[in-house]
Every structure is written in C-alpha cells, then in structure tokens.
Amino acid sequence: MFVWTLIAGFAAGGEARAIAAYRRSYNAATGHGLYPSSIYNRFTDEVADLLGDLLEHTIEEVAVPHHLAPAFDRFRSVIAADATIVRLHRFLSAFPATHEGVSGLQLYLVHHVTERSMISAEITDERTHESTLFKTGSWMRGRLFLLDLGFFKYRRFALIDENDGSLVSRLKRSTNPLITEELEGWRGRAMPLVGKQIFDVVGDLHRQGTDVR
Picture 1 (cartoon, helix red, strand yellow):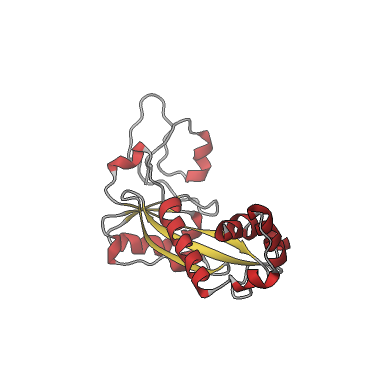
Picture 2 (tube, rainbow, N blue to C red):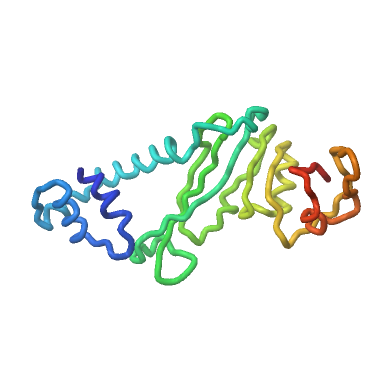
C-alpha cells in the first residue's frame, strides 16, 4: 500500500504535492495513522531500488505494444525509436527542462516492433534532444526504422542507408522534394507527378497513397 499510494496518490499530484500530503493520502487509504517521522523513515535505498524495478517492468510490459496491425506482418524487423517527457517537481534541478520553473526527464526507447521487445532505454534530462540518443551502425542492416520528425536529418537518413537499413519518416513542411519517378501506375486520367514538388501536388491527389521517388 505504501508504494501504491506513493505512485497513485503522490507522484501524480503535480506541483502541489508534498510529503505531508502524501502522509494524509496514505492514512486515508489504509485507515492507519502514521507520524511524519515514520513516513520519512520509509524512504530508503531499498524503496528507491524497488521503484526503479517497477519503472523497468512498466517499460517492458506496458510501453512496448503486444499487438500489431496486420500491415506489419510483411516485415521481418521493424524498429521504432521515440521519446516522451515526464514532468518533475521543479526542485529536481538535476533534470532541467526546456523552460524555466519546472523540471523534466526524457524517457527514450528503441522498440523492436516485430519481436515486441525493447532494444534499449535511456533516461536523460528534458533538454537532451532525442535525436542525439539515436545510434547508427552495422546493427541497422536489414531493418526498417520508423522515425518521427524529431529524428529528421538528411545525414542520419544517409547513415541508415549506408548501413543497409531502411526508414519511414514524415516530411517536414520546410522540405519540398522534387518527384523524379513514379513507382506505381494508375489507370484513367491520373495526374502526372514527375517533375513536380510533393507539397505542390499532394493536396490535389485523391489517392489513398502513392509511391514516388
């Protein structure tokens, strides 16, 4: 009950949380009365280790999906990299945020989507850019990487290609690539795309998808 109340009744309590408020939550949840000194004495190294183990378990069992869309069945090795921000109390200055008055940590995960497992996880402060945690190398061979815009960088894409990997990424609006080849034929009066830039024509397309270079 101590850990459950700590997580549900205190850790999610926002900036107003305090040890005294946690003691009141614990007393209300258990029907027992604890003196302040008894609460403080329970914050031991063993409890810190337990909370770390619970976080690791949550990452492995909750953060990694166990059910995939059928579209992924065709791929042997699909990797997804992403990060999320966890807001912390402002007094935890070891985890500086991107703006003043708060603190925050970043949880960075690399998922093996097809095997439904976690390749790696890192915890940093919020100011560390997620893309700097993405490591390229020979481990990319034969794998498809799903990347968000936070990882959008032409040099990174080139390194994935040089290591015989593949990637899927959204395009930034600031980019407008020139279409040099259509890889899929369309019947009827389809709009020709070669020689045009993607964002100049995508709004006029009525296709579910298109495959171009």
